[in-house]
Length: 395
Image (spheres, rainbow, N blue to C red):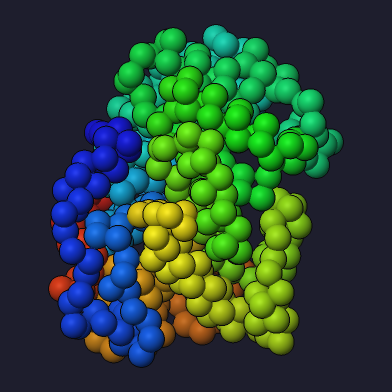
């Protein structure tokens, strides 16, 4: 498997002299909707997905199937797998990461946190990841201790690695250049930071210590994100910065997540959601549109504005919303009817699909929606329509 930073650099080199996509069939976007012009996207733009390890065996098996399907159909550059408090999900995180690489053929960015772990614990987890073929880790301090809602200024981890930069240094010390390392970015400011400029200096120190790229917290204000990228560039941070995109799945979960993560919600987003907040399907559809607009803005912005060439989706282990956003962006198309409502296997089928989707991934349940995806000349990259590795997997 490959380091993500090497794949990004190779992709940029390959498409450096390529003209923007001006395919006439793609002039109105994947859904053929006038005004959805994707031709200004940077050549070779890419996307990636985040998953979390479910708590149950049926949920884990369901997720294996979903990662396989989404990797084949949607062609992510990589997927990342989260990590529980103090390594509480280490075994399941490693299982998901190993399966995704071995059976789905997709590169994995595995989260590793230092909260509550000794240096020996961290080294052991890194050794296990390396033995599974994992080449990329996202180095994080981790969630605050139980009983605390968020990190506060001056807080440090209870582990031997007090901050993420200590983890980055440990990884480089123990494994040299073997791992590609990503770190977190906070466009709206980290809760434990009181000085934005000091926070940027800390971020620059993590890059200087050996980190290769930045994956940001999710946001709903694209201009704020672009300003963050410009500030990073002004601070001498030249590495790739991947914006975190979280499609809205339900109004209740949207409010809970934005409040918990202190994410600002622009008034225009609230105005679109409030009238339909009790209609889960309508909220989900507006969520597709908002996520599409976010992606389109950050992908079409110039380099001077803070534009980027890739996006990272927080999937919440769900498939339908991310797939619809990628259809809107021209990455994939519906095979039979571009205007038809998308149904994908694994998400609850039909118009009733809502926040219960998240429960299905835990229980191992799932609908039997029809597959209506296909590749097309307008897609930004050919999709790898190889047979599922799970079909021949011994049970």
